[in-house]
Amino acid sequence: MAMDVYNTVKALHLIFVIAWFAGLFYIPRLFVYHLEALEKSEEAQKYLVPQLQLMTRRLWNIISWPAAILASVFAIWLLYLMPAWLSQPWMHVKLFFVALLYVYHWQCHLMVRNLQKGRYLKWYSPFFMRIWNEGATLLLFAIVFLVILKSAIHWIYGLGALIGLGLVLMLAIRAYKRYRARKQG
Picture 1: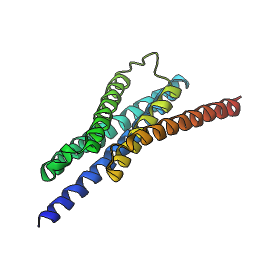
Picture 2: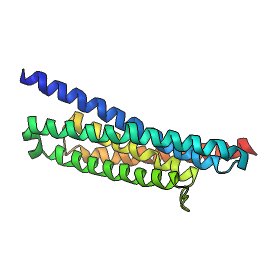
Picture 3: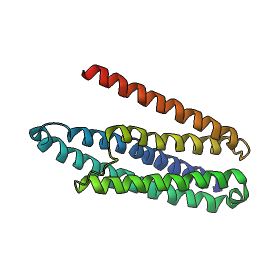
Picture 4: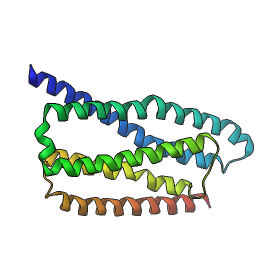
């Protein structure tokens, strides 16, 4: 019976982590589309911006926030069921990355609020948002590898891999930016 409870809680935690990351992956794309809509004619903006604001609001308030909260509730429940994990170094490193994930989430929240209110800060650009979009990807890699390997020692190698992945993603974003520039003119 105890194993059934553990597996059920673990499954629910994983489901809400997946939903949370789905929101974190898509919200910066909506930011990109929103900012690109501002470069279009006033007529196009009149239709695009409200629709993108609606999509952003629904994604953020109906999927992302509830999933983040429920993922955390089930994570705390897992730690209650398996308190020995809190004494393991890999868990300390994982919790550090989860804390970074919440910082990333909160920054996305502030961006959502600004874009909903029509505040377009200077550093908000489609290119910045494409780079910002990769933050969740890097955190996902770090967290999943820590959970699967359960090794704090390997996190050093993992950190090197994350930096390498980050560089590859940056190069891909830059290449895509050049491709779009050539395609547009």
